[in-house]
Length: 289
Image (cartoon, rainbow, N blue to C red):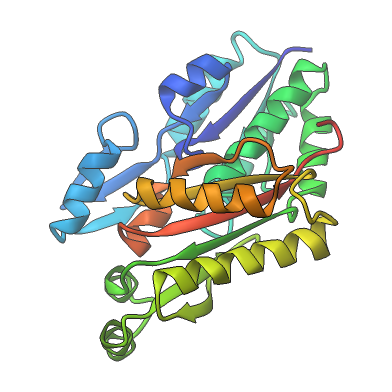
């Protein structure tokens, strides 16, 4: 049984990386000032942030049903099955659409709604690829990914409240007060939604909040205090130097974590929080690791 692994660009996996890994990535569409763009195809990270800073009208969209099924059809010419891992159903309707479309494929396409985004979604793809290489079929891979879907955690510190206000996620008054006080909000993604977690007065305090929260989740949920059982990652929005510094701090706190991967945060999340953000993610390693 030859099983293909497919995801979308919210995983952070570029088209070039997909080719190297042997997976398939569906580019996510964006509407910017009335024109449609596709992440990593006709829209780069640099172009996205330039338009964001220039106050362009940016909105996310889900892929068309035709773009999803045409990719499945092409893959199924070379593979027996497809495991499709889209972004969390709590953050986009694209997952529910994919599940509906998969019904016409009579078991040849398994859609995994394990509620991941960005590097945690990427880790699901890597885990699925590893299982496929071991000979596991699509239903088996889906079952494991679904049973472990809550074994990840994300904390994000924002540099500005501007984009939360623009997207209607906080009131203008709250944004003005937060800006006046120079607050650094810390948000969290736990399975589904992007929610408020804490407020910090400085970036240093915000990093401390995130590191404490990650340590707590690792110990209480993953049974891990050293990093040996967890994939740790740092993600950012146009904040690479700070991300590298945070990675080094995490490596000291969790000496058995191994390589701590750094990546850019998914653009679908970035459009709501803006540049300058910093995040820590933790995903419990599968037993197969």
